[in-house]
Image (cartoon, rainbow, N blue to C red):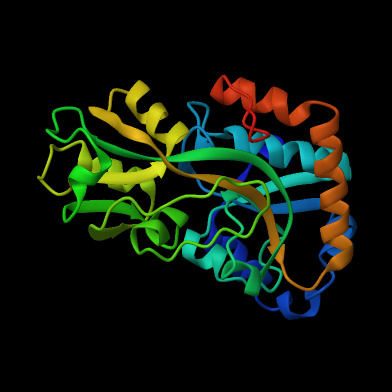
Length: 277
């Protein structure tokens, strides 16, 4: 199996790097080029962005973006799957080099992470069980709504979402609900599929992920229009301007030559690489 097809768990990688991680602070680009490997943190259970396919290989839009970045750096890629809250907490200390995990550059995250660039934009929507009686987003006021922990969807439910990116449409908080936190959006959809009110009345998540679940026979439907739009960015630990600039340049080239458009159309059927998609 090729090197860039291997999947490494967070625990294994953390153990291998613990003794040397502190020496790499601020030297990510040098580390990547010397090792010939780009360690990318992402999710293994968030189709169609990133998931393990039938061949037991990482696949998806984010995975293809990460592989293309590694290709343009002339290095191999390895995928690591720490939990989302650990990725967004920053202070990675060399355990991985880059997050390609559809992360929104919020103001709070910018305190510990740097964002070399936005690579696509997606609608955030509310899903309910297909047999739900609710027809409007406001109908869910006071109901149990799920979202992944430490996500922009959870921040939206908490009325504490501040997106730090230009060109994103303004949004309003359309409901006040009982927030139920899950390890990821898929776990929330797994509870919602049990029936309206069994555990949840709705969930907030990425529209492409919700539509992918519906295509996979989850008994869900999208409620109303998107509640906000997410600019989704590459993320790195703060403190390495050279690495940031290198990634920003690669991303700009991928936008200019149509690579991001092609990958978006491949996975979503629409060009999400700009707000006009």
